[in-house]
Amino acid sequence: MELAIVLIFIIGYLAIALEHPIKINKTASALVTGVLCWTLFMVADSPPTLLDSSHYKHFIDELQRNVADFSLLSTTQIHREYVIDQLGHHLNEIAQILFFLMGAMTIVELIDAHQGFKFITDRIRTKSPKKLLWIVCGVAFLLSAILDNLTTTIVMVSLIRKLIPNKEMRLFFAGMIVVAANAGGAWSPIGDVTTTMLWIGGQITAVNIVKTLILPSIVCAVIPLIYLNFKLKGDLGLPEKKESDKEQASQGNGMLMLIVGVAALISVPIFKTVTHLPPYLGMMLGLGVLWVVSELINPDMDEAERKHFTAAHALTRIDMPSVLFFLGILLAVGSLEAMGTLHNFAEYLAHTLGDNRIIITLIGILSSIVDNVPLVAASMGMYDMKIYPADHMIWEYLAYCAGTGGSMLIIGSAAGVAAMGMEKIEFIWYLKRISLLALMGYFAGAAVYLLTYPFFAVH
Image (cartoon, rainbow, N blue to C red):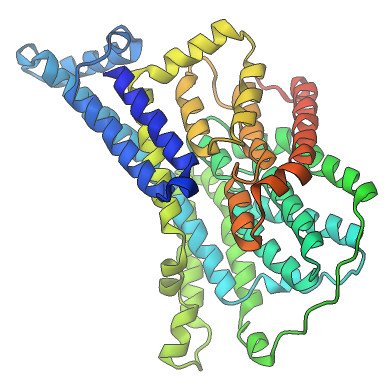
């Protein structure tokens, strides 16, 4: 049974990675994989490795205390009770991540509907390619820490379309935006979905992850920029015409929405620290406040015109296939964790490679080939928090490696896939022009973290 589930997981993973050649959306593959893994787990017998695990024995002890007629339960019934219990446990964790992401996406869509981001992008006017590269990547780095790397990439690629008519030059900028946005998202609890997963899961805390990863992340982004500062040649091309008065007028109360929206996003870590409630509740509170503001502004618009600036309309624009993709892949990974497969794999790696730093570094490199969300989800199940408590080196280093390692290939991160779609960046072009730069930054940042960690260590 365990082998069959692992095979289904691998086949599902391949279907996700080969989404374009096989012409099947990765969300569909993820959902089918997740449901099949749990279905097989339910109908088959427990693997011997699970029966011997302390986690399973703890469940049996709890069941004996809570079920009066425990002695009448068959082995099959106990197994099914365990599967249902584990499914509920994992669904609780997954739902927190999904509601968090949906709230953040809706806030960003609301700001964008009012063209609030234009107050940032319109202030960039330099004509020097090298100077513009530093400005664009710097803004992407900072913005991704506040929003997220995917949203930041979309915003910044939209910006360079207006600033850089030269196609070849624009591709370089798009590639570097991916690197900078992924680096910027790694050190913020709300900047990258993998860091968010670790934060919500309790593996890292907001203040500590910022303190320990900001320097490695800066190095990861700066090293490729320094190289390009000497190698980048060419011009930006002739600027596009200024936008029409109609488009300018549609900005409306963009500045107000930008301030309230960014404040809502920034307040989420503060909300969690003060109340000790899950982060998704803070995100829902922020969305609710922004929703109220969106209802009160634009009072002179008629109903049809006003509809496009409402939160209800923003909800129709969020990327629901991505949300369902996370649901499917996290369900699949959850089944492997519930069976004890991931824990056994972690022990195998520990005995084979020995050094967790090498293992996490390889996970980061692998995240450029395989989506980093399931990799981090798998890693969270591989290592026991009783052995590796919150803010342990293994979790911080995982946040850095998984967050920045995806930059090495254009398909390795959500930010890269977004840039690929928007600018039609070819896989081979990115591999030749950007991958080596991203690799340089990745290892430089990793070295900085490993060298500085002893100074910040809390364990």
